[in-house]
Amino acid sequence: MLRRIAYSLTLVLLLLPAAAAAQAERPTSTLDGAVTFKLPESWEVGPYVTTPGRGVVQATIPYPAAERANLKAEVTLTARPVPPGVTVAQESDGVAKNRYEGLAVLSDTADGDHWRTLVWTFRAGGRAYLVLHRFGVEAGRAVELRAALPLFAGGDPKWVERAASDFNALCESLKIDGRNRFEHRITPDKFAGHVKVTNR
Image 1: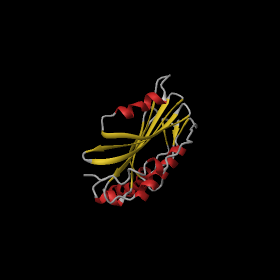
Image 2: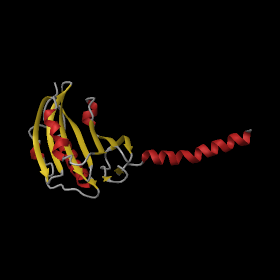
Image 3: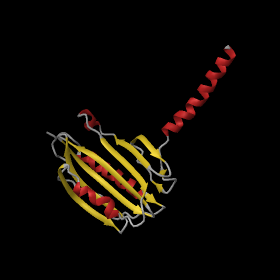
Image 4: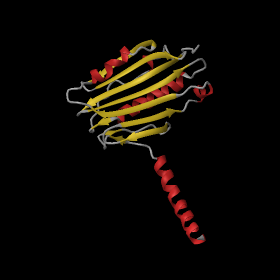
């Protein structure tokens, strides 16, 4: 009996590092490898699902000033198959139709016929947010990448600029079947007048 228990404990100890390593892995693709990407190293990866039919990756961008105010900078990447004929406009036009309080689109740029990037602001629960939003539709698959950055009194405009730079890097790496077009990067002038919004 003692020998059996010792064997079981040894097996558990051997498997624990492998399980921890698997949990620590950062996803780099979904939809069976059709959608690929590289998350910034500084972002903290949360729950994710990567299957041939659906991909959802969640992450948090560390922001100590926001965390002290009980706020988070959250990112979501989704990918899914879509029927033939679906366009990036159809996938992204809904942004302007959202009924968020104070929604304002600050920037809306297309990179060819298959990719689109928006920057917009809104308020929810008395809090203000800056949203960086990227859409792509290629080869019967659609991707959506959204980062919601909190804007608040005492926030750090330089942090917002760094977050936008990291978002640009992720957009650069985000590909469908190896294809991407990203000519209109998000620059600080697109949101400079909004990063000092005070949450009341």
